[in-house]
Image (tube, rainbow, N blue to C red; front, side, top):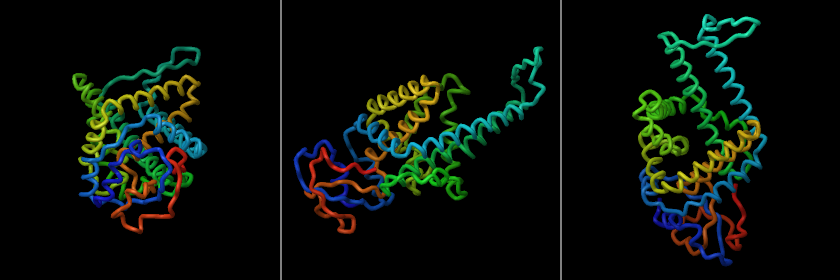
Length: 308
């Protein structure tokens, strides 16, 4: 990334005087690996929780039907997987208590452990991780195109080439996140890793050169750069889910998409989504390539058009 683009990226939005000045739309080029590493290590912006949540709400409201559809599909698939798991355990663990009342009795043995591990791995690697990555890609594509989400983009990461790339990251995230579940002394390191790896999947989706290690390491660096702000942000998103749960669970169809898109916008402001046009004051245009600049706009910062 050129030095001119670095100056633009490092300029915090709140540092621009709220006066009328001339702006242009600029689409930064997709960074190469060395340029992106430099951005990750050096970029500093002001963490603005209210801005991310507000943008997340506006985007979700604009795409509510798409999120409701994919949310309903995820619920139905999850129910089907859990029903399949129950039947795989075997009917011998269903005990009749009379009056046609049945209860589920679970026993840990070699058979049930193998079935549990198989269903856990299958559900995560074949469905959860691909759908999660696809949701990031769907939101990022809509941001790039300044348009509504294409429902087909929710399945864009189920292709074999990307799935094999994602499998390594998925296995690593599962292993390190589940340390505390299997070894209770490691419960705090496992929980800590879950927090610091929040940007691992979007980094992996956006940058083909980001392998397993780089995706987790860069996410760790970004999380620690804004440690207290990130904790407060994740806590707020968690409170939103609790409120949605109190609304008979139906509220989750709204609060979960808002939280997810808010995380996408946090990623965009802290790291940057490839190909998303940004408003740049003309005072910072020196040295920028002409092909990245579009029609000038003269407007105060406070009333600048919101780019999806």
